[in-house]
Image (tube, rainbow, N blue to C red; front, side, top):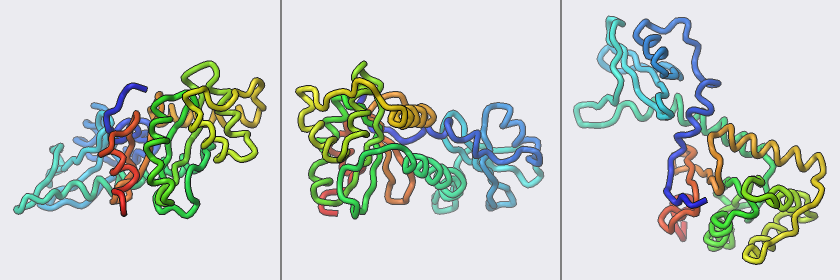
Length: 257
């Protein structure tokens, strides 16, 4: 994966929005009109000035919608008070970001992953990892100070998508007697090929790999590493590629904290 940019998790809005969208039967006409233009309505909230607020998703991004008091017009945008404070962010976080975080984080927890780091670590990070991915290996190496200090546990959701040997290597790691130790040895020997690929993948391990790949695609991602973490507000964010030094401090936490 050659992309190093630090990305927000906008792709997942498209992947999950339809399943979470609120029923449309009783929406006012302007809101229904927005739905016909591709807006997913996630819920309603009270707004100042006699307006009604709606949380929506358009082109993978959350948007605020305000229905005028007469119910005949809808305004899309951010509402500010007299001091310039954003009155839209909190409702969107409640109606969109937090439910999506909970739903997706639960799916990540239920996937087939290998833990790297202390069980008692305060911060949990998930990443889709291919055993042949050079940038996955760089992320593993760059994360050592946080992992070794017991501050972060990185959960590697194993997939096999880069080379013909990727699935066999991922299967060997998942099927190892001590998967965390096998992953550590593999990453340390990555430059020389790492773990020996499993020639015949058992059905149960194949099912785990297929489930991980399906989840990755469901969330709208197709390359490794794709990293999932929570920001200080508890909202899930993502990054793709080997993170920069500055991005590592955001994903894993500022050193010393």
